[in-house]
Length: 220
Figure 1 (cartoon, rainbow, N blue to C red):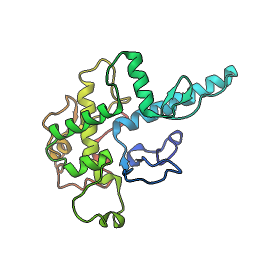
Figure 2: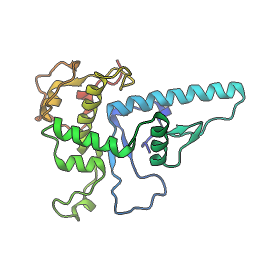
Figure 3: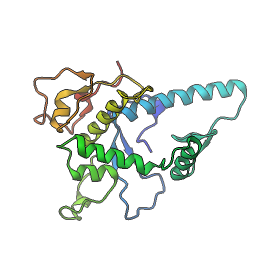
Figure 4: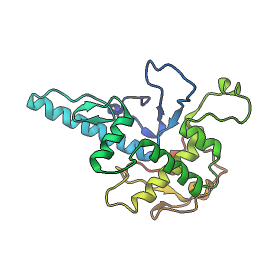
């Protein structure tokens, strides 16, 4: 779930995603709060606007409103992501179309393209337990999602690079990444369109306090 109502038009750059839904009973699998990437932030806002427009149209026609949710299929909220992905893959005749494939792709690309993004950050972003150090420390740390700002930036960069090779836009709004910030995480490839480098860019900056304020322009 998102930490706030998308219809409220709150600044997405301050937001995080909470992977533990209300009433969720904790298990051995970690469900961390993750930073909201610029790519997903733009789409969430676009989908919220589309939902509001559809609701207005349905009310005008006297049609029952669709169920609300991020993943809707035939006007109904899906119950299981795995089954939905398999069903869509079957309809598109794509073998092995699963969410695990997407996770593997993003993890592999982050490791390959960004030398300075640590394995610990990649593990935490995937929701895996990190065995380095004392497990007791986790109970005392705040779990700030923006401690994963580097891997979030890497994710946005990968989506930008994919967007340069696809006919359909991968971002719902124009987004420019900062060259200095990408260099700081060891990017091997740079997108074609970038923000101008700042004199004070790089790892000397405080990258956990409102990092997207200096790295990304969501709406221009």
